[in-house]
Length: 292
Image (cartoon, rainbow, N blue to C red; front, side, top):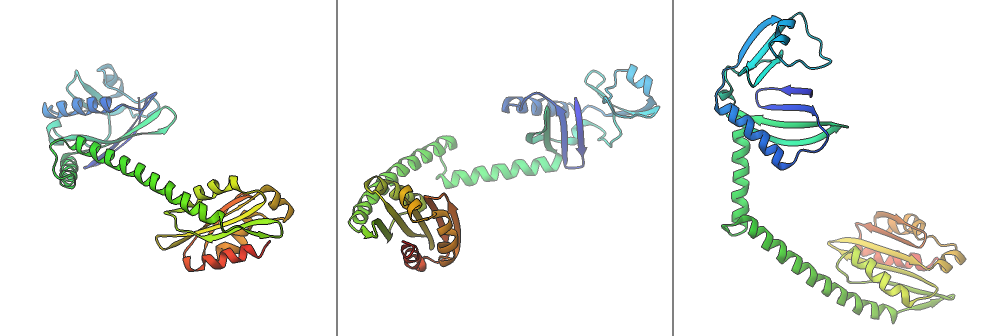
């Protein structure tokens, strides 16, 4: 059942009751049917008549809509579509040229919305899509099978990501060994505070969790610079957090974030921050060290 609509020269919105999302095949089927009727160039017949007479002729009326005694009936092949409608219409369906659905979505429980275009707007859209496809072909070195070219690119990307992951893990193991050799004993607390060379903030977190099993009562502060930005991580053992009244999240917010000109947060025993000033990483680590 129609639940609402908007129609202008280039665009339409049609809301309807339906129990589920339309599949790609269903959308294609709707487009095919509409475009078939457009190509048939069916005359659009508009009549004024009494509401009762219109309903008796088979005209569709929306439940809940209020109609006057005199109604406007729009007929597009009496065996195909007869409706009560107050909007403007073309003289024949062929004037619509071409119909293309742009999107289909949910707008309420049990109500879907189709957004579509016709005429010149539809032609412009198709031309833009073809231009984009041509650009994709050129970017892929003009393969005959574009989909296969994209799949090959995805496969290459997956392979490279796996190789990068192996490299990162090797890098983490090297840095981990150096950090374990740099442990300082500060008032019974194992302290590690270093600026390290890793690829990104995720690698910094992986590094910290790889080191954690080798430590007991500890406070670890690791920093790195990635693409001109500062990242810092604080990890504290439960015992040190309790006995020294330390909270990694509060340290990040009250001490570190301001120093590296950024922000962050987390939990009591693990928190991170990002900032705009990588040159201040050593200063930030020293500020945390002084809390022990």
